Amino acid sequence: MSDSPSGHVVAVARDDAHRFSKPTRDSIVLIANHGVEGDVHAGSTVTHLSRVRRDPAAPNLRQVHLLHSELFADMARRGHGIAPGALGENVTTAGVDLLALPLGTRLAIGDDAVVELTGLRNPCRQIDGLSKGLMKELVHVDDRGETVRLAGVMSVVVAGGEVRPGDGIRVILPVGAPQPLRAV
Image (cartoon, rainbow, N blue to C red):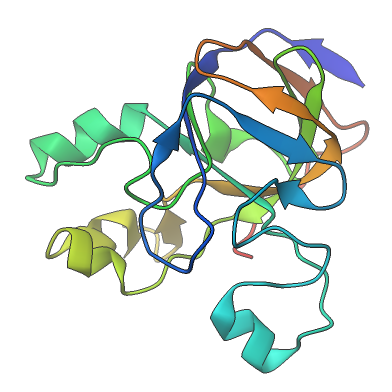
């Protein structure tokens, strides 16, 4: 695997109940093959309510949600105020082009934690409850007819550890031909 320098953690969040936004914290603990300690979406099998209804035994590819803070300024220009944790993400980043990374990319966060990207977040309509029309901004069809998803990326925890605002993030690209992230 090749390493490339990157950014840092802006904020971390977790919630123990199924609510749309997550409160920010001083730190979170990632647990290998499980997710964020104390977060409702942690687990080796699906925990998102809509996915549990479809197949409760399916692997949880959405253990940790990461979102790039650069999105906040773009959405503010479009009339949507967003703050860390508001879109339900666990880790808000800066300086990492999350949406451009290929499937299987690993992010080493802080001293010990490592997550592996599994896909693009496929958000639900609850986003419009945060700000009317926000869903259309975060998921839309471009001029080529392709669906564009801007609501961050999903990952699984490969190595556990504590994650705090200010922690560095190092991108570790997968070996082989890059595969684009798809909605999960």
